[in-house]
Length: 538
Ligand code: UDP
Image 1 (tube, helix red, strand yellow):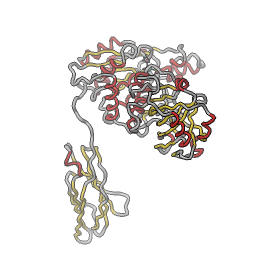
Image 2 (cartoon, protein in one colour):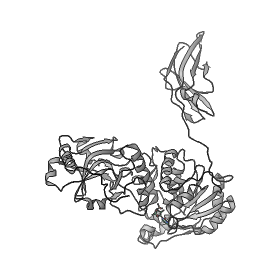
Image 3 (cartoon, protein in one colour):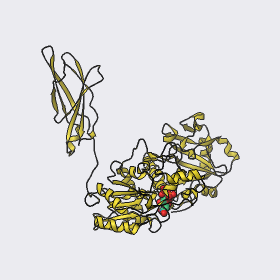
């Protein structure tokens, strides 16, 4: 990986002339600043002003052209965290003629992806906010390939996980600070600005208490495509149905400790008759952790960012998340949400310490490590007496931090009991079982035939053909749902049927028009689309 901008020869005078004549061109996807990603030609950046610059000329394009709505509040989010006011992107505008009076532009020949990392020191944030969104933004735009240059504009230094960001393309990512060394006015030949949010599953509680995102769009399949890519880059091979099954305890060594870790490991090994190992970010290389987790049957860890590594667990494995005293597991669910994404095929178990005797608090530490000594006495006492942290907003709630940074002596019988409620026999990856779920198409050639008996009775014979895709599928159970609705009424009679025809006589009146809605259902819960409504007159 080369630190310098690639040595692709560009004809400087031609590039400068094109910039002056054509100006900047921008076309974006997305309707709102929160779902927008923009493609630019000749977007510039002044390292002195620390501003992006859009040059107007006769050929420049700006779509969307929002006028001053571009500042209400911004053109787009530069990180994948929705509508965070420290992460907005915008540019200032100049006529291309102003270039005459400006520093000579330095052209960036690489295709650039320009974005903000949200919190590069926290592993959960690294994967959820940055790596997955960057990976899938690059999948979305074919210009963004292995030769893409990533530009991180949030202003942080590399951070402890920078090696992970380097895996996403062949070129060394550049940080905002480094741009100064390249020149006073940088012009990106071709660039994309912003990140797709399509893979994110969690909101951190900036405007409402934290929780799963309202409309999750990612499934285990896409998560595992990403982890497969990462494992290839890390040179970790998936050991096929490898010999021994084992449990991984992912420990923290600085804070939020498990105080009886040795006892815990022995107990897990004994209960499940499996080898049990510990890993930590401090004592193992990232590749080693991925290698161990990707073949584990169970991952046990305190609540915390290291649990995002369950991304790498094999299907069928179990995640056990331990919560310190007074922290309600239901209120902090980034890892539960991940483990229970459709198609992740992980079992998730939460255990909480409910015994005050088993917790160790640190009231005298600095506030950001959970200390509360800076609060007034009454507030300190209230917090110490409280048995549950009330729901709160991110990120500096002292009661939350106080409880989050407790150490815990895990009550072993209670933990084993909770795990055993879910894991009946041996935990472990279920190999080979393809659990992808495919939906039925519309039923075809629906027909109805009415018959009237006398003045008060009628029958409706309805038939249809199987959905077109069914003949290529092996489906355990195929059912049909039929709704019969009298025209003009709001209610309908629903039926679940096993065959492709049925004669309805209940509540069918003569000389009436009925609307008949039919859809196919695979395996009880895979609902297909309704076919075009069938009009039947008795
Ligand atoms: N961390 C760690 N060991 C520790 C404490 C923290 O590896 O003993 C890591 C943790 O996984 C995360 C980062 O340091 O990537 C920041 O941890 P913090 O407690 O601030 O965040 P949390 O884990 O609660 O999200």
